[in-house]
Length: 290
Image (tube, rainbow, N blue to C red; front, side, top):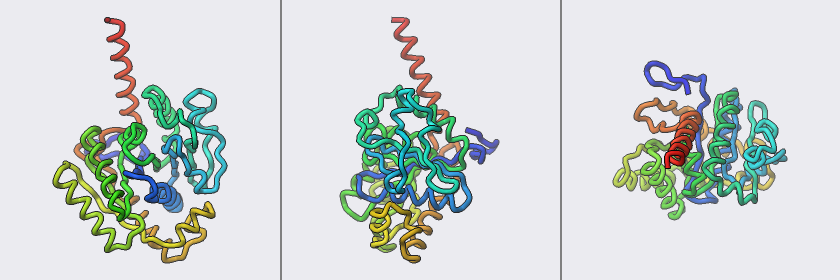
């Protein structure tokens, strides 16, 4: 990570945003894919990482054919560049691998092997979007807390709101993440604001976090059509729906990058890797001394 004298992150390091949700089925991957496509349209070099390990479907949503899986990289059977898939101009996709039990339960050493590979890969991009799994599992926590910013996606469903709060609570209390962007899917502006205010009220009462509402995406038939046809909404949606999605994406992508102090930026690829290597070294020293 490269910092300027005033603590701001320079543009020599890629911006890293994790897109997460408390529960599945809220449109997290849909939002991730379209954030990536919108950033690429704006001229950024974008890497979309499918970190929903074991249940990956970014490549399926985009109608792409994966060349391999992250598991092959971890096990030394392939280089990480070998499994990259070209999604569109300036957009590359790193597929996770679906139906693989090993990926859903990565060990700490495997997590850090992958993180080391990602450290080298991401230097070629302006923006890295990490589509994490849903919930509060170890893989979700690892990759969300390893990112510069976290975008929480939820819907007006009461269970979605409850689970989104649980995700924020765990990331803030156990991983020191203090700032979150929030997007409300499948809701008009009025309903989205109501959902966000409820989340904000309970978070303000019990947690020391800052929530930043970045927008909403109304429920529409175009989304279902895009998902079923494995196309971007830009290729088959109405202009109104495309404009709504662009408004949300532009809002999230235009947020200033956090500074290194007091911003919620607790980890970067490099610092998380260094922390893991230090912990391994400490365990090795303790083993030798005992």
